[in-house]
Amino acid sequence: MKIGVIGAGGRLGGKLAAEALDRGHRVTAVVRQTPCGDSRAEILRKSLFELTREEASGFDAIISAFGSGFTADPAVNCQAVEHLASLTEGTDVHLILTGGAGCLYEDGTEDRCVCETPEHPVFLRGISRSLAQGLDALGRRPGVCWTFVCPSLLLDQDGPRTGDYLTRCDRHILYNEDGQSYVSYDDLAFAMVDFAEQGLFQRQLVTVASRKGGRA
Image 1 (tube, rainbow, N blue to C red):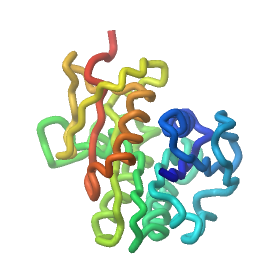
Image 2 (tube, helix red, strand yellow):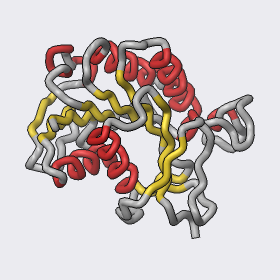
Image 3 (cartoon, rainbow, N blue to C red):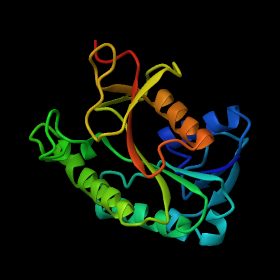
């Protein structure tokens, strides 16, 4: 497969690129400033907002690990989702986007999202709301083949790559066999490349958790 990885210079993006390359796929790292750490990837140096429809149509799948960071206008997260959707609308490109646990419903309800609870970190609220708006916008685009991937509440950058994960598609928090809402970066990347390879969860939100693990 030909896979474009948006934000391949970041922590998750780098793991996504490496996972896809290890499986023998042809990977193009779309990076603006931070370089991709894997020399096997082809490099396309530009912002995702500079990506053209012609460039996007050359991929079988685009996996986005884009994040605005904590100092930018949170609205850019929704804008990024909508821009990538516009590039792939009416094509067969599978657009796989990284959301956030803040987009999920509060445990046991569908009245409010995690980002609307007092426990959600203040510095993440704007980002989470913007991503949720992006998810809503995807639902209004029937011509886009999208998958919106939310990690668990605890996203562990140092956790192991087990390749053994759980999924849930009803927008609720997913708890693993240890009773934890937990996923490692490596397992999240493993799952997202699986979704690309197998064409899974099209036009759905899916939450991912490592089967075991969590806070001690």
